[in-house]
Length: 549
Image 1: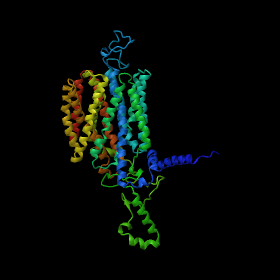
Image 2: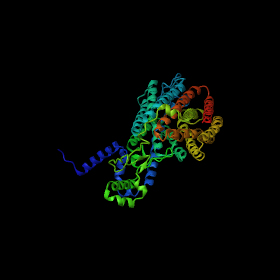
Image 3: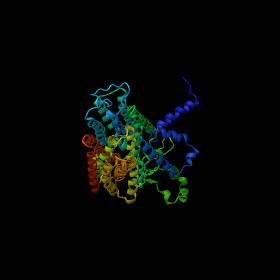
Image 4: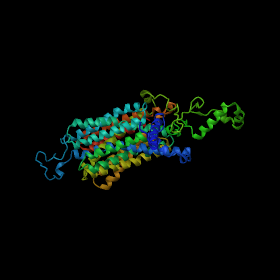
């Protein structure tokens, strides 16, 4: 039998301790290792409030990066469209390339997108992804509430990276079969539906209703940041090797999936933090100071010799058992895991059954906001998938320059999301905030289509204005409103509905996201102006839905 050294034994013990801690309901592997390394006098100096603040900041930032990687991996196709089919007569013929009269207009295109119906085929790829994403979204929320959320999200991110990588392999292995691209897009849509219900539910577990609009308004900029980074990365390779435009984003989301498995903290109670007030209730984790006081009181009560001392030293407040969420600690044991942190999850959160799909539909406002998001995503995703190609078609900019210019739409979206969140928090009128911004967005899209193509700086200013007015309401609906409806008072404090409500609203919206790019692909062949007319009609429909809330 081989003898092991002391350091090797210590390493094996820490590994086993870490996984045992996780299985017992404690923090994830990466957080447990960090806490173990930082344990000692430094940790004891950190107050409970400071601990809550730093963990909340970490969760907000980490989920921001997680969903940024989702959108980063979705963006490349909209950039690569500009080289899959383009005007080859304006492209310099490289040395050694043989071009005949029959192929003069198509020699630079990528089959099967080298035909007259190329826009329809590219629109089919968008719809394959978005329809599968929309239908899978309705089931993702249902599944997310019933499994370990960290496993669900990290596994979905890893699979999303694989599907994005597979699209890029088509360039390397010279794949020209349409059904390969459609199959990859369908698979990608299914696995990417794991993202939104998971990150919204995780943030909802950590943040209460106070200033939710501002917090989620800033946080929801991950959509625009992901689009910007995806456009920049894809634009770097689109002219020379568009396969890398997919492979690199696929690798990024795969790495983020692994980090999610190591570091995502789903519940505040997993690390001994205070849970938020969802419905005029504070679901608390027992802080160490109170826990020690409770243990002293229990010892005195169980010892007859100390009864007089305990009675004299302790007024009425210590004679009563500590109560959290209506359940006393005399009735519920405090479980101590291997990390040394008492982390029991309250019945108000963990032991309540997840709500059914039909009950979530009955929550006031769910159907109205779902239909509003249908039109919101129809507009937003049409810009997402077709804006670079429209800019390339309507201006003299190259494919990479058009991709870079299109990012300004998302820059405006970041500002719009923050503004919408601040106004919603101060007025408490999320519906009115959305309606006002939509009413301004309708004429602004018409102005952009008519006047943006002649002068570059005018294009820049109008594109940012359209992004602000289109994505501001979109950000408000998908985050703050979804989280608020998921903890509606009719659910009596059951925040388990959050993933289901989010999946219903975002799933309905994703149907609109699938319809918009499909219609754009069909209409753009006639005239790009007709695409903008379609978007204006959709904005009118979105404003009409808001009036019903």
